Length: 37
Image: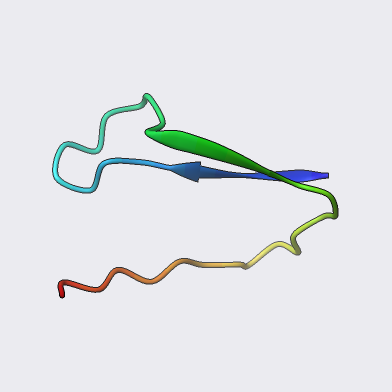
């Protein structure tokens, strides 16, 4: 089981905007992508 923590990019505060629980493990090295559109 894994979690994705969504944070506010403008402030980078420690509190997550959303937390998504995933049923399986996400491998180490997984990264996100920020798009300015």
